[in-house]
Image (spheres, rainbow, N blue to C red):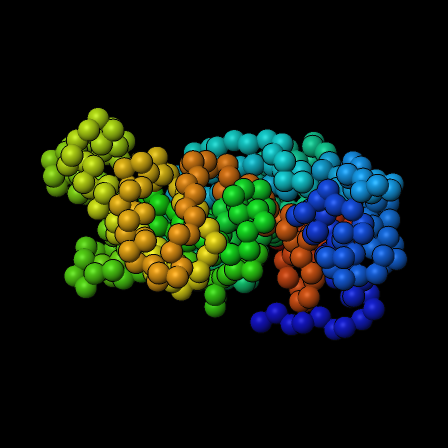
Length: 421
Ligand SMILES: [Zn+2]
């Protein structure tokens, strides 16, 4: 369990510095007077700390704000080129990379095939990431770290359990940090998507929202009070395993009747095959089913309509529990959303406690790079959050931003730990 840091005058200054940097990163460009007002700090303290941030090359005067009669205020923004972060979405069969600047602007992106299962996968993963570290070394600003989004549960220490890629209690973050010599932060991939939505997408400025993903599985990212809700041990958001039927079809998790076993791609493909709509040897049954529905097949449309109703009812239950302002639906399954939308909305409204009805639903087009950008944002966010607790992996990111290098274990030691696995 992380321990609260001892209170010292230096700590208060570090907290204020992180809060100001966070406010400029999240809400900038912003005037000093507005920072002071929102953080309830004295004008002198804000002037003092922002001068230090400008001198460190992290913050700059970006534009003049609108004048209310007097001298127009000076607005402060981040210096994008001051630092970089790499974000990677790890899927069962590929890696999606992005490299971003301190403002979160994408400098480079690519997708590579990758097999997460099998011997030597971790050594290969470290090799690919080392390539990304080398590329960052030729880009502007120092590399703050690597953020990884994985399709599984990630605890506070960065241990990953992800049956879909064959990992169980894997100490992924410490191992890779040792192998690469840069800070490595890991989180559930839907959480990284929710972070991307919060910082750069539809969730910007929204305090309470949920991101529901559909496709290979069903995922959930929960943002409460502007921050991710992870639950005990990082397990929050396993919405795909919500029980919806006593004797439903078997789920990959070993239970029966999970939401995912009724509405995720494998379930829809199974129904399409059973109905004789799609052949058992079809290499891409979901694309075939979608084409049929697009072409007017009632049987194909019924499969999506049923899935929309089941999902809508389950999400309605979430609305009753969490009362979000906004529901963002994302994931590769949204390619067929037009066939789910109507029954989803009807079932959602029917399930929601009447005073909570009318919640906005936004559908986000499927984009792998957005998840990776969210993974990079795990790293950027570390520079904006208050260092209240001791020895978080975020400390190493903050130290790099401040120019203090964090050697970590040597590369040889890290490589040995990977091989020893
Ligand atoms: Zn399940």
